[in-house]
Image 1 (cartoon, rainbow, N blue to C red):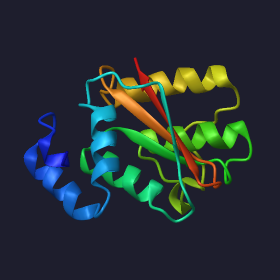
Image 2 (cartoon, rainbow, N blue to C red; image 1 turned 135 degrees about the horizontal axis):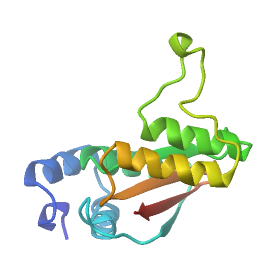
Image 3 (tube, rainbow, N blue to C red; image 1 turned 180 degrees about the vertical axis):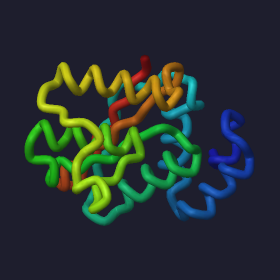
Image 4 (cartoon, one colour; image 1 turned 180 degrees about the horizontal axis):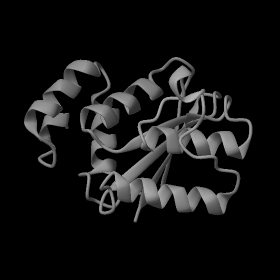
Length: 152
């Protein structure tokens, strides 16, 4: 089944995906079926594994970006504390990039899970994503990925 056979997404985006992700038609088709449309509920978590350098991150980033699905990519290797993990997710949801102009600070200081849930809901609401699935992709650095889907 080719990616173009999925009627849920615009034809031009599916053709673009097929050009960007070569020789991965089966994986692309599977991800498209799992993700569905922006307003569809998805599986709460997806475990993707494979050899290092096999294209797991590339395929996920390409699909999520091309289809303009709301998402955040976090590295569990770089985020060695929960605070760093929470703040990296929130920074991406708010399109905030720490830099010299903001003294390399995060969008929100987030120390606890309770704070994260509160700020996350605020981010979803401010971005107008209340009725959409938001994907959080964690990269463990060990040839596997976890995709978490949230829907409020």
